[in-house]
Length: 298
Image (cartoon, rainbow, N blue to C red; front, side, top):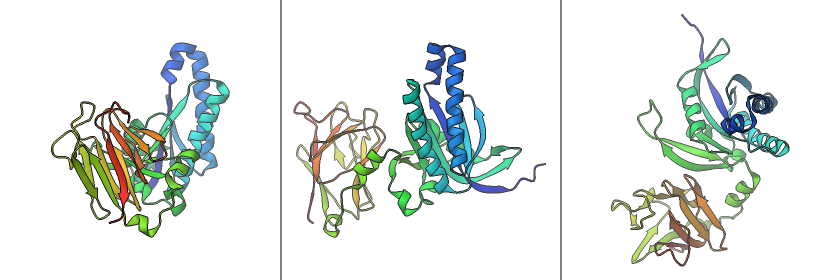
């Protein structure tokens, strides 16, 4: 019987995307060489940032950290180094990374426990060049690291009764700059978000929990568009900003007052100033189901 003690760890799964295509296109020997080199790049990052590689299976590297801040630094650096390696090699390679913090058992060099399964699930949710993590990680981040976090989705995880809130870690400096360079004054925090669609006008205030947008009649703002999902998007007030989260099949298009456009797919973005939202199709003169939004004084 095992007497291994349970401790809390930050667990990171880094999964190399595109390896199957490489084996098909390059042959086993060359593909194996590239994958092995990339796994060594990731393992080196783990060592540099204070972690330990638990195991390497196929095209996936699993590691553990004693401290959440080190794991987040490591995950971000992994993405940077993978991106650099892909550019050097001229290959279409990337990584998707999952990160969770919780109790686990380490025995014989391996890890066991529910936290391991949750971390693996985060990696499976992540897209290419993305880091997906959990509330347990976000709660343990420093103020400095909090600025790279954005809420991503709510998901059902096997063995969990309630849906888990998950987050995207923005490892690219350009992404962080876009989300956090708009200064917020006290008057900004008190403003009301107004959304207009057809004859509907909805006012959303900071004290409200959330507002749902979609084709279903149960939504606060109903958009009867063919490209819209029944539950397409959610607006929440978070850290002094109104934040739009896409929960749809076809994605959400967002154009702000400077005409900068974003496409959200299970992602979030702040609603700053004024702009327009397209559910499932781009904002354009041909789209008859565009939602307009702006901030106004209460």
